[in-house]
Length: 174
Image (cartoon, rainbow, N blue to C red; front, side, top):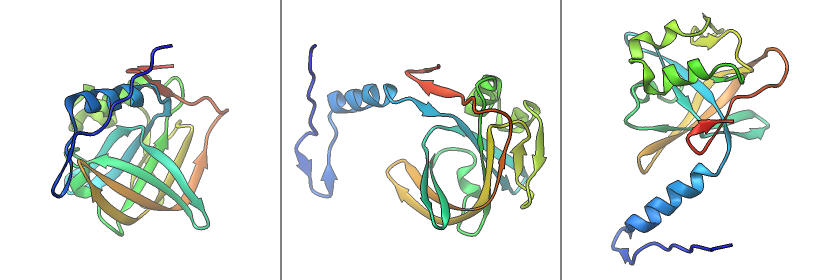
């Protein structure tokens, strides 16, 4: 088996400079990581906002907390702030259409037309037939590179149906 080892270019003052080779290698490595798919929702000034995300993980059980990474250029990003409610909707295997709609196939104002949505206890849109809905409040928001790390303190969890998650890897669904 061939092995490729890539390293960052010489560090410049203030941080490392990534070579094109390392950047491409990193993207290739991340494409090999299978991830569950979710739609993150929040309330914006003009109504509900949402985006498809795969950078989600449980952080701790005491207190129940999840970590979500959101690109700072995403339309939902401006609505994210400490103390604001948010909902993480874990998608089921048959919800590729929802993932696509919130992943950019539809403009933001048309996305909630795909799937059956209702407000959670905070008034944030939750997908009725998602694998799970995790509702909570943003406890911490930390910018890092092109993204923000969003730490959500969980307030409510709703489970639906059998475990049958939508999984994304290498640019497609498994």
